[in-house]
Image (cartoon, rainbow, N blue to C red; front, side, top):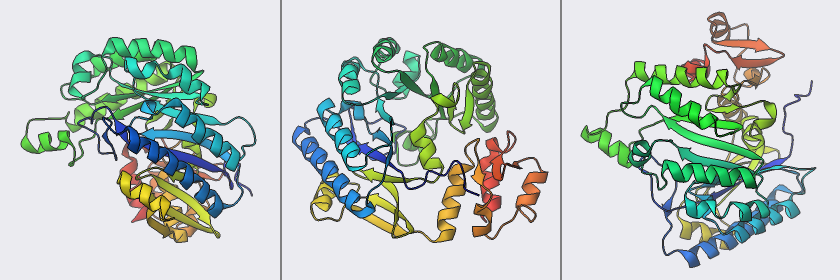
Length: 386
């Protein structure tokens, strides 16, 4: 039976814009400072367009499923550059109808002034990296905007876009559940249809990671983090948001990110820009790609038809494991047919044990993590895949 959620041969498009006004102390993404790089940025736009055309030659004719501009800070891109990439993608991969085109934005006054032009360029969904609504928290997180700036930016965004998402960071040092509930409730009152709340993660290579190693930064302990997680779920559920993925909540199915769903369902997507990851089916084989991380290396690689530092053909087991890892994060779950590729079955261990323990369930031929299983999903996946 055909899986109704199968994305088929349609392709998503991820564009990585690596420039940021400043590097946040928690960020371990592939980013660089924005200053004094005008000529370099112009060259990167041309390289992205060239890479897009080259990947179209590899994939052959496909339909476009979605576009996502991430980073970095793509709201720093010139709107005319955004428009050129959107137009080229539509021309090379004609979509069947209206598609979601998302751009991540920081809510500084300078970037908010571009929102109308970005909407004219084709962006129809804005993902706003507000991260916090308290000035002390924003200062701690190294953000360039104040809480007042964020509110002004949200007001401008509502005028320019029908679809808005907000990113928030919680589990900050000394943060208490009651204060977080109030902050989250205030964010919801701004009218967002989609919320992505992320627990603060301390990565070793970041400024926060170094501070943690020195003993000058202490995140919440496990019990406090769990309480903050439960508070997040309770506040969002009470406001009518469904946790359709572990870190993504939507006010109804229409508010879900179709680009993210395309990726989580195992759809093909092109990765464009320095360090961008992609997944393409080439000659019938699922292929993982990673672009060169350094901007100069990526631009030179595109010019020499070698934009990728990695191009790995996945085995059926590799592809099934990756699909399971992504799909079990969602309320849709994974097709049960994936289990056979991994040498598993619903009747045998460990799947049957996880179902009996209330961590997984089988529904409509899909394997789904339960409310009990989702908070401990790493452990569930470890049991399945080892």
